[in-house]
Length: 206
Image 1 (spheres, rainbow, N blue to C red):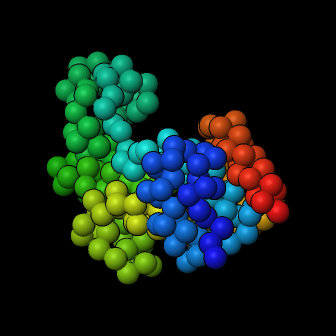
Image 2 (tube, helix red, strand yellow):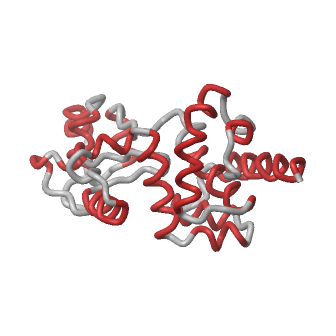
Image 3 (cartoon, rainbow, N blue to C red):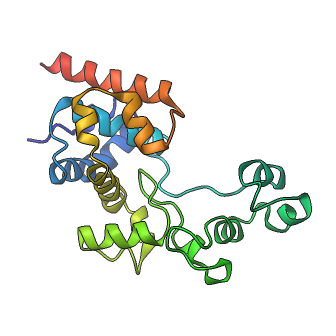
Protein backbone atom coordinates (compact mmCIF):
# COMPACT_ATOMS: atom_id res chain seq x y z
CA UNK A 1 0.00 0.00 0.00
CA UNK A 2 1.34 3.43 -0.96
CA UNK A 3 2.34 5.91 1.70
CA UNK A 4 0.90 8.66 -0.53
CA UNK A 5 -2.81 9.10 0.10
CA UNK A 6 -5.30 11.95 -0.28
CA UNK A 7 -5.38 12.20 3.50
CA UNK A 8 -1.62 12.73 3.63
CA UNK A 9 -1.71 15.34 0.88
CA UNK A 10 -4.43 17.29 2.67
CA UNK A 11 -1.84 18.25 5.27
CA UNK A 12 -0.12 20.45 2.66
CA UNK A 13 -2.77 21.32 0.05
CA UNK A 14 -6.52 21.62 -0.50
CA UNK A 15 -8.81 18.56 -0.46
CA UNK A 16 -9.58 19.01 -4.16
CA UNK A 17 -5.92 19.09 -5.16
CA UNK A 18 -5.10 16.25 -2.75
CA UNK A 19 -7.63 14.04 -4.51
CA UNK A 20 -6.37 15.06 -7.95
CA UNK A 21 -2.71 14.42 -7.24
CA UNK A 22 -2.79 11.37 -4.95
CA UNK A 23 -2.76 8.72 -7.68
CA UNK A 24 -0.03 10.19 -9.93
CA UNK A 25 2.16 11.00 -6.93
CA UNK A 26 1.70 7.52 -5.48
CA UNK A 27 2.67 5.94 -8.82
CA UNK A 28 5.71 8.19 -9.09
CA UNK A 29 6.88 7.43 -5.57
CA UNK A 30 6.57 3.69 -6.22
CA UNK A 31 8.50 3.92 -9.49
CA UNK A 32 11.42 5.90 -8.08
CA UNK A 33 11.69 4.16 -4.68
CA UNK A 34 10.43 7.15 -2.73
CA UNK A 35 9.13 4.64 -0.28
CA UNK A 36 9.82 5.66 3.32
CA UNK A 37 8.21 8.42 5.40
CA UNK A 38 11.34 10.59 5.19
CA UNK A 39 11.65 10.13 1.43
CA UNK A 40 7.96 10.81 0.84
CA UNK A 41 8.01 13.85 3.13
CA UNK A 42 11.09 15.16 1.35
CA UNK A 43 9.65 14.66 -2.12
CA UNK A 44 6.20 16.02 -1.35
CA UNK A 45 7.40 19.04 0.60
CA UNK A 46 9.74 20.03 -2.22
CA UNK A 47 7.29 19.45 -5.06
CA UNK A 48 4.49 21.19 -3.14
CA UNK A 49 6.64 24.27 -2.69
CA UNK A 50 7.87 24.28 -6.28
CA UNK A 51 4.30 24.06 -7.62
CA UNK A 52 2.54 26.41 -5.22
CA UNK A 53 0.80 23.59 -3.40
CA UNK A 54 0.29 21.50 -6.56
CA UNK A 55 -1.51 24.40 -8.28
CA UNK A 56 1.01 25.28 -10.99
CA UNK A 57 2.62 22.97 -13.53
CA UNK A 58 3.84 25.57 -16.02
CA UNK A 59 6.37 28.35 -15.61
CA UNK A 60 4.96 31.88 -15.46
CA UNK A 61 7.05 34.30 -17.51
CA UNK A 62 4.60 37.21 -17.57
CA UNK A 63 7.24 39.80 -16.58
CA UNK A 64 7.19 43.58 -16.75
CA UNK A 65 10.05 45.45 -18.41
CA UNK A 66 11.55 46.39 -15.04
CA UNK A 67 11.41 42.78 -13.85
CA UNK A 68 13.06 41.53 -17.04
CA UNK A 69 15.97 43.92 -16.56
CA UNK A 70 16.35 42.85 -12.94
CA UNK A 71 16.11 39.07 -13.49
CA UNK A 72 18.01 38.82 -16.80
CA UNK A 73 20.19 41.93 -17.09
CA UNK A 74 22.37 40.45 -19.83
CA UNK A 75 19.35 39.50 -21.97
CA UNK A 76 17.56 42.80 -21.33
CA UNK A 77 20.33 45.38 -20.91
CA UNK A 78 18.13 48.46 -21.25
CA UNK A 79 14.52 49.58 -21.09
CA UNK A 80 14.13 49.82 -24.86
CA UNK A 81 14.92 46.12 -25.31
CA UNK A 82 12.91 45.05 -22.27
CA UNK A 83 9.79 46.90 -23.41
CA UNK A 84 9.73 44.93 -26.67
CA UNK A 85 9.30 41.72 -24.66
CA UNK A 86 7.43 42.82 -21.54
CA UNK A 87 4.26 40.87 -20.66
CA UNK A 88 4.73 38.51 -23.61
CA UNK A 89 5.67 35.12 -22.10
CA UNK A 90 6.34 33.41 -25.44
CA UNK A 91 8.76 36.09 -26.64
CA UNK A 92 10.42 36.20 -23.22
CA UNK A 93 10.92 32.42 -23.12
CA UNK A 94 12.40 32.37 -26.61
CA UNK A 95 14.91 35.06 -25.64
CA UNK A 96 15.95 34.00 -22.14
CA UNK A 97 16.26 30.29 -22.96
CA UNK A 98 17.84 30.64 -26.39
CA UNK A 99 21.20 29.01 -27.20
CA UNK A 100 21.40 27.02 -23.97
CA UNK A 101 20.11 23.79 -22.42
CA UNK A 102 20.04 22.29 -25.91
CA UNK A 103 17.73 24.97 -27.26
CA UNK A 104 18.26 26.65 -30.61
CA UNK A 105 18.42 30.39 -31.18
CA UNK A 106 15.64 32.82 -30.35
CA UNK A 107 13.95 32.34 -33.74
CA UNK A 108 13.79 28.56 -33.27
CA UNK A 109 11.00 28.83 -30.72
CA UNK A 110 12.65 26.20 -28.52
CA UNK A 111 12.63 28.46 -25.47
CA UNK A 112 8.83 28.54 -25.48
CA UNK A 113 8.40 24.95 -26.63
CA UNK A 114 10.55 23.64 -23.78
CA UNK A 115 9.48 26.09 -21.10
CA UNK A 116 9.48 24.89 -17.49
CA UNK A 117 6.75 22.33 -16.82
CA UNK A 118 5.93 19.77 -14.14
CA UNK A 119 6.09 19.76 -10.35
CA UNK A 120 9.84 20.38 -10.47
CA UNK A 121 10.05 22.45 -13.60
CA UNK A 122 11.56 20.53 -16.49
CA UNK A 123 13.22 23.21 -18.63
CA UNK A 124 15.18 23.16 -21.89
CA UNK A 125 15.35 20.67 -24.74
CA UNK A 126 18.19 18.63 -23.23
CA UNK A 127 16.12 17.89 -20.13
CA UNK A 128 13.05 16.97 -22.18
CA UNK A 129 15.21 14.63 -24.27
CA UNK A 130 16.69 12.95 -21.19
CA UNK A 131 13.33 12.59 -19.45
CA UNK A 132 11.55 11.34 -22.56
CA UNK A 133 14.18 8.67 -23.20
CA UNK A 134 14.47 7.58 -19.57
CA UNK A 135 10.71 7.23 -19.04
CA UNK A 136 9.73 6.20 -22.59
CA UNK A 137 7.16 8.90 -23.31
CA UNK A 138 6.46 11.60 -25.89
CA UNK A 139 7.59 14.60 -23.84
CA UNK A 140 10.20 15.57 -26.43
CA UNK A 141 7.74 15.82 -29.33
CA UNK A 142 4.72 16.75 -27.21
CA UNK A 143 6.23 18.76 -24.35
CA UNK A 144 2.81 19.98 -23.23
CA UNK A 145 2.07 16.52 -21.79
CA UNK A 146 4.34 17.41 -18.86
CA UNK A 147 1.51 19.64 -17.65
CA UNK A 148 -0.68 16.55 -17.17
CA UNK A 149 -0.61 15.31 -13.54
CA UNK A 150 0.78 11.90 -14.56
CA UNK A 151 3.80 13.37 -16.31
CA UNK A 152 4.12 16.41 -14.06
CA UNK A 153 4.62 14.02 -11.15
CA UNK A 154 6.70 11.49 -13.11
CA UNK A 155 9.10 14.14 -14.43
CA UNK A 156 9.63 15.34 -10.85
CA UNK A 157 10.32 11.77 -9.75
CA UNK A 158 12.78 11.35 -12.62
CA UNK A 159 14.57 14.55 -11.58
CA UNK A 160 14.59 13.36 -7.97
CA UNK A 161 16.13 10.04 -8.98
CA UNK A 162 18.72 11.45 -11.39
CA UNK A 163 19.88 13.91 -8.74
CA UNK A 164 20.02 11.22 -6.04
CA UNK A 165 17.74 13.04 -3.68
CA UNK A 166 16.66 9.91 -1.82
CA UNK A 167 20.01 9.97 -0.07
CA UNK A 168 19.46 13.50 1.19
CA UNK A 169 15.93 12.57 2.21
CA UNK A 170 17.26 9.60 4.18
CA UNK A 171 19.56 12.04 5.99
CA UNK A 172 16.56 14.34 6.67
CA UNK A 173 18.57 17.13 5.03
CA UNK A 174 15.91 19.64 3.96
CA UNK A 175 18.43 22.42 3.16
CA UNK A 176 20.44 19.96 1.09
CA UNK A 177 17.39 18.85 -0.87
CA UNK A 178 16.44 22.46 -1.42
CA UNK A 179 19.88 23.41 -2.73
CA UNK A 180 19.98 20.48 -5.13
CA UNK A 181 16.57 21.40 -6.56
CA UNK A 182 16.71 25.18 -6.37
CA UNK A 183 20.42 25.94 -6.56
CA UNK A 184 20.07 27.86 -3.29
CA UNK A 185 17.77 27.94 -0.28
CA UNK A 186 14.87 29.95 -1.72
CA UNK A 187 11.66 29.11 0.13
CA UNK A 188 13.43 27.03 2.75
CA UNK A 189 11.05 28.05 5.55
CA UNK A 190 8.00 26.90 3.60
CA UNK A 191 9.67 23.68 2.49
CA UNK A 192 10.73 22.95 6.07
CA UNK A 193 7.24 23.65 7.42
CA UNK A 194 5.63 21.31 4.89
CA UNK A 195 8.24 18.64 5.64
CA UNK A 196 7.53 18.89 9.38
CA UNK A 197 3.76 18.66 8.80
CA UNK A 198 4.17 15.51 6.71
CA UNK A 199 6.49 13.88 9.24
CA UNK A 200 4.04 14.74 12.01
CA UNK A 201 1.29 13.00 10.03
CA UNK A 202 3.41 9.85 9.70
CA UNK A 203 4.31 9.94 13.38
CA UNK A 204 0.66 10.18 14.38
CA UNK A 205 -0.19 7.27 12.11
CA UNK A 206 2.56 5.21 13.69
